[in-house]
Length: 228
Image 1 (cartoon, helix red, strand yellow):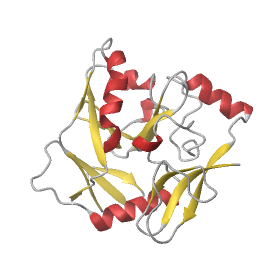
Image 2 (spheres, helix red, strand yellow):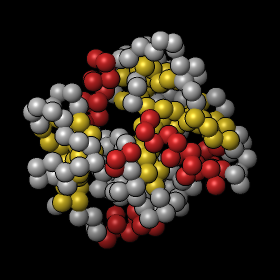
Image 3 (cartoon, helix red, strand yellow):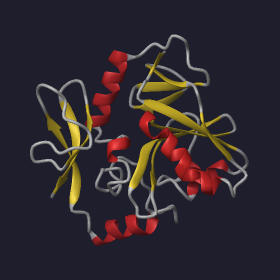
Image 4 (cartoon, helix red, strand yellow):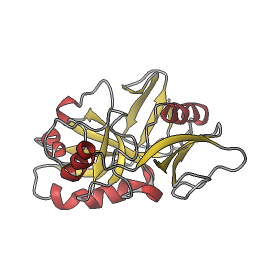
């Protein structure tokens, strides 16, 4: 088991944690379990994706695995809503460790374990993290980081095709705009893969014919949003 440095996990505890998240995440939170991570996104009222990642049942509540650059933003965004619930949301000063076996299945053949205290010194899973990033690009899963936060609808990031959006679950924050775009076909930008040589393109900026780079891998591939 080694650390995945790009991520942080947040813990939501208290009665009705899943019910609370049902009103804010794009996935059906009734399907969150402890065996396999559930892809999800958190949208703003305007339907823009603030963060994407995974939800997992953990420690009598739900853990949210998000990009490390967005952990504080997610906490600040949800805090006003959590205040009126019986739940508590916090950043865990621990680690998400990845391996070929572990606590739960994160993606395909890569498992993960949530560690409540970050090991000192931390060990970075360079090879396995590179493999995971390549797998996420293969699956066209847009793992949103700070430079592209609150910019795109879930469909523009392909999160609907990646299984992170449930259009039958009912209302959640931003759902009306997301559903309107889905049923009226108003999405004019889509996620696509690309390749590059040399220095990696900058996430959040344009690259060649692509409007905005979303993620890149060490093997010279990436995901970008492009006008269609």
